[in-house]
Image 1 (tube, rainbow, N blue to C red):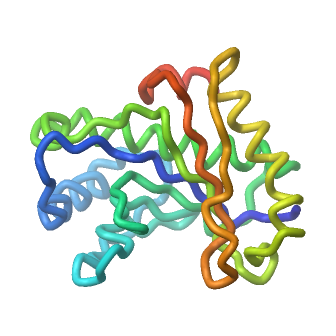
Image 2 (cartoon, rainbow, N blue to C red):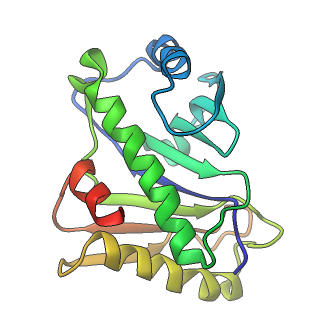
Amino acid sequence: MELHRIGVKWFADERAPLNLLDLIPVFHRWIQDHVLDNLLIDVAEYTHMHHGPGVLIIAHEGNYGYDETHGERGLAYYSKQPMPETDLAARLATVARKGLEACICFTREANLGAQVSFPCNRLEVFTNDRLLAPNTDAAWEAFAPAVRALAARLFPGQVYKIERRSDDPRERLAAIIHAEQAPGPEALLARLT
């Protein structure tokens, strides 16, 4: 599959409910301080949407966000531009790496890290291009090998399972990877670099 509009969401573990509006000044500071390796442009807030994208950092290459889709919170990164990697598995590893870097920055924030952690034993891998990757059985068969390659790289020698999120054609094509062990973002980032 020649997909470039793809993403990963690392599910969060909130010790106390996080007020998403508190993320706006943090994300603006990330832009000012060039915290992430991307051209960060602006912050967008969608907290009015039920189970929506939450609060986003709009960037040139891809967007970061603390997402609430499907009623589950997590830190998502999805690419918007073509990537230099030649195969889909390598592109998935790149978006996973960018998401992990954001998770680490998130947990290093004094106020946020006390409330939220990212165990990184559960993630969603999704396509964001319904034209090239509609949520069909044929597209799933083409997408699944790259998802399996990402899971094998993230969780070598560990027990994990991969499930298609939904076969509803109105939903994005997506997979959930769930590993038994929770290695944390730093350990997984080391496996992708």
